[in-house]
Length: 202
Image (cartoon, rainbow, N blue to C red):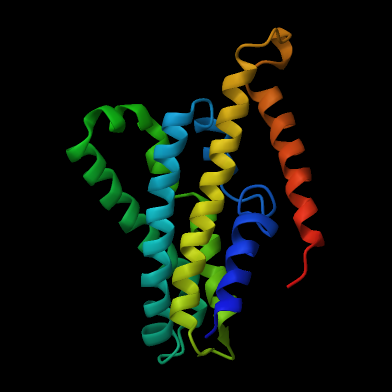
C-alpha cells in the first residue's frame, strides 16, 4: 500500500476512466437529472454515498463469504442485493429528512438501484484487487478509495453537464435539437475530451 497507488486510482477513476464519460455507465441518470445544477449535485452525493458503502460491503461479502465457501459465481446477485438495500436506505433517509428533495428526485432516486455504475464499481473492485480469489495487500483500502473516487468522477461529469445544459437554455436552439438531442451531442463532445486523458501513463 503506497501513495502512488492511491494517486493512480484517483486520476484513473476521476479522469482517465471516468465512470460516465469513459466507461459509459450510469448514463440514464446522467442525461435525465443533469438539466439543473442543484438536483445534479444532490444526485451525485447520493450516488457517491451508495457507491462508497457498496464498495465496503461488497468487499466484505466477497472476501469473507463468497470466496471461502466457493460461491464467487454468485457475486453479481449478491452485489445487486447490497446495492438495492442501500438505495432503499438512502431513499428512506431523504424522504424523512428532506421531503422537498425527495419530491425533486421523483422517479430518479430509485434509478440508483439499477444504476450500472454502482454495480460496475463493485465488480471492478473485485477484478482489480483480488488475484486468484485472494485479496491483494491493501485491497480493502483500495476498494474504498476507488469507490469514493468513482463517485467524485460521477459528480464531476454531472456538474459539468448541468452547467453546460443550463447555459444552453439561454441560447436560441432549433426545436428539433432541444433537450435530449443536444444533451447527447454535448455528452459526446465531453467524452471525447476526457479520452484525451488516456494519453497519461502512470
